[in-house]
Image 1: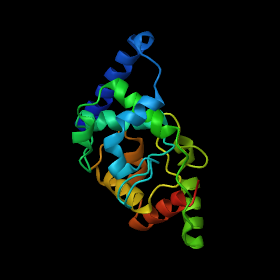
Image 2 (image 1 turned 180 degrees about the vertical axis):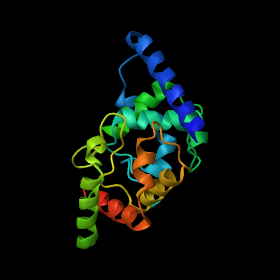
Image 3 (image 1 turned 90 degrees about the vertical axis):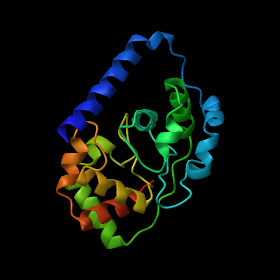
Image 4 (image 1 turned 45 degrees about the vertical axis):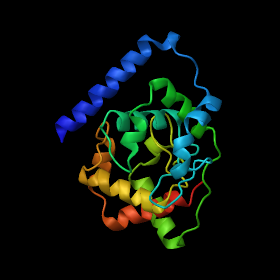
Length: 198
């Protein structure tokens, strides 16, 4: 487990260093070009960035750096799931930046009303667990940290369980540590609360 996390950290550090070195040579991300490059994404994630089924994530309004990191992880084989490795493999860093620019500029997914008791329990647990220190006050995400607000409940539950079990590699161990102590009930109310936000 430690070796997998270390590998992920080293790969991302290498990407970050490489990006910093060549920063001046990189063109600004182009959302219009990103839309063209996203054609294969639309079958599952929709032209509006809203997943076509509950187990497919909404990627509209995700922070661009979060989309970038997730696609790089899929491309490099550090993250697996939903066949994304196949789609990400041929993408260049520029392609990924453009795709991220397109989806991040879309309107966020709509909030979903949930059981008031579970929403309240999720809010309380979010505060106790300091989720907003990384995911931002309304769980809208920031920098490389993903947006949870408006996300599909089923997708959030699956990802939190995978992070808790170590099935999904956590970049720096922060989410793994946070999820380790969560019960299935905790995960459910967190997902319901996140889905209720916009």
